[in-house]
Length: 108
Image (cartoon, rainbow, N blue to C red; front, side):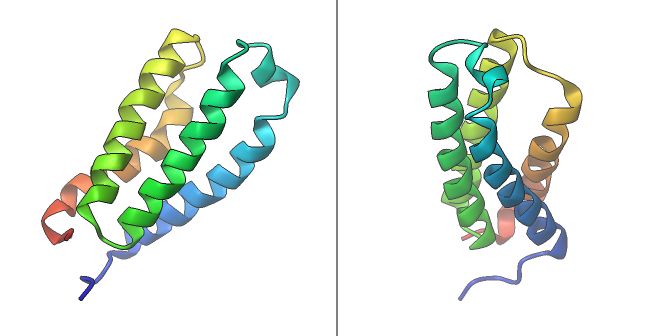
């Protein structure tokens, strides 16, 4: 039985999924291609990783939390490395991580 999912986690995951769909279009922009030759591929693969992690969190699974944690760390490191990191773009990712951490005991 899947435990009751908190509404805040549902809201943040839905916003995360919306961001994933927007990111798919962002991959084809000239701005992202100007960063590096490998960066569009990274964004594409990290978006798939993010979607899998959000699905796991929506299902209240611990593997979803750990996959999300992996995505979060990897994303932050790469954003700093390519000099694209800013606090505004990291707020949603951080909020999902914090809520996932606070709900960890409810995850299966």
